[in-house]
Length: 362
Image (cartoon, rainbow, N blue to C red; front, side):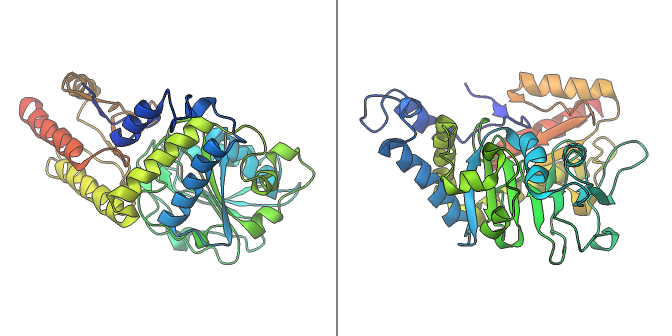
């Protein structure tokens, strides 16, 4: 029996995507071997690769100005690879600080240029409870780019309206909320996302980048770390993580089958309304620290009256078949990661448990 998986990542995958992988694991399309055993130069794997790109292009309406890349190394590699390509010594980039991952991205940029904090919502207790307002941004019109983290898995905040950064290229780490709703890709010079939240398994990282931005990348860095190298080779410069990309393809087929991103957004907002509703109707017991306008749809963070009750909540939920609810060690409390594969019924099961837990311990 499968559990209800609220893990922050690697997260649960849609059951149809897993069932398809199970059924094709030993014999992919009658070829007598698994997709992971195929050459990445062969037509059988290339069909999967190209279909994944085509599905992403269709679902997101990716314009011809942008290109899809599949890389490795996760978002952590992108923290370094973005400035490696687009910062030079003495040059500046603006970073909007909203959590731990934006802090890590800033730290990596310091190796290549002079990044600056253009906005931060860090509090005295080292926590973040919201994203910055447009009026709080102190942007440099000469910056090489502006970097933001669209969703904050640890503290549970999210950009619901992306900021206006003028003519400066906008770069976004969308690892934990990519593909949760329609997105205007044309607003971004580069989007990167580790797949292991909404898109697929760990091991592959998605890049959506403007072709003219890629062309501006530095040429005095190793070839493998140039975005242009992978763009020129359709992400097949070296052997890509073929099984992970195959599973991404399966997930994208599932998204299309649901009705695409508009249907997925409706599903995700329903889950968020259900869960935040359970928190808000018990304000004396469940406390959500994030300001309402910045509440994340993907990662819902809250606290119970004591750490002992937090622990009891996690343990009893696990006994009831729900896992992954312990908050990050930085933030404590409870964290519900309700990525795309989590169903509305899964969230309703959790909120029924929450109502019962209040009656027993409130």
